[in-house]
Image 1: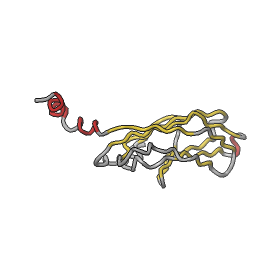
Image 2 (image 1 turned 90 degrees about the vertical axis):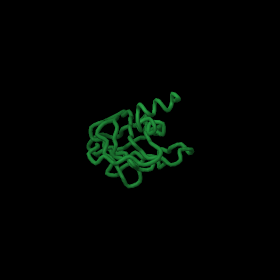
Image 3 (image 1 turned 120 degrees about the vertical axis):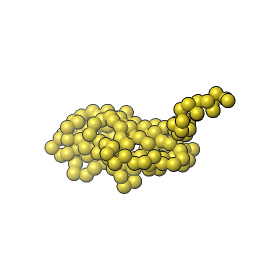
Image 4 (image 1 turned 45 degrees about the vertical axis):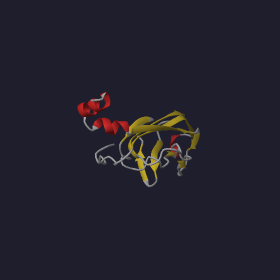
Length: 142
């Protein structure tokens, strides 16, 4: 028996699923958020053009804030689904099962009493995906 077949037999179907997994990383351009009632929506963070059909399994984010962090509201959105970001870095499975080839967008708002402006820099989004049958959505995921 070949080594690959022996590994698949030993590891079960998880080896086949792992072989079809991947990730992509997109950068968020520098954003200046001014205190306002209106939110600032970022340009879309685009997946690679060659991605093809794949389903999101997990999304992670990170960004730096220069200026007031208190009073800054942040969300990460894909189409109509938005996730409130409680921290400048973290991950979520709320996008699980959605199309990994669709762009994501950050949304920021600085409450008027928080200060004049905040600068968002070094932002990234990291999307883990799987090809084939989409994974079940975890309704309890944050």
